[in-house]
Length: 91
Image (cartoon, rainbow, N blue to C red; front, side, top):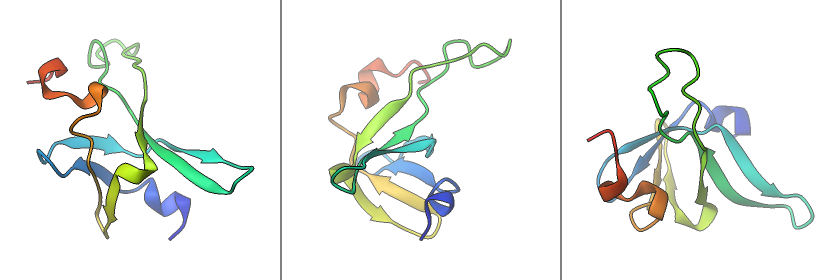
């Protein structure tokens, strides 16, 4: 599988089934040749209504990737602070 193929897949939290979004980028350690994590978009502050709904991107550590399937990438992001359901403004 190529990196460009990964960008077409949705990232889903296995603990609650919540869609975290598509992969925006990969965090790589080029010296060691390993993937550190996958970068997914954070929630936009005003949902992009005016085109300036920029947000912080989130990094899901590579060791949290549980399965890469045909349609989705399953991750365990439940105890990562940025994916905590109590902080979710979209509920």
